Amino acid sequence: MSKNIQSISVIFLGVCILLGSWFISQSFESDNDVSLVSEAQYRYEFISANEQNVIIFDKKTGNYWRRFIEPNEGPTEWEKQESPVMTSE
Image (cartoon, rainbow, N blue to C red; front, side, top):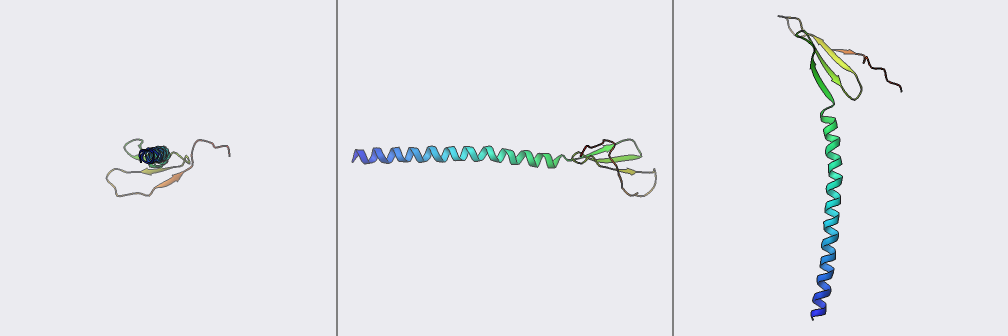
């Protein structure tokens, strides 16, 4: 009877070690997903150049949109601008 309990205990310990290793490996993979979300979250940057100009900059493509705000007037349209940085593609 004690040999059966010892065998069952060894098998149970092995299963616990395998499951624990699997859970740890899954937690490392989920950290990579968090970094991808973080990159996408900080893709755009809002820049206030001065009192009349605001810029939204896309860090991934290098494009930016500029908006001129005249004092004491209503909203104006956004204009897409070409990036001053040359890409070698």
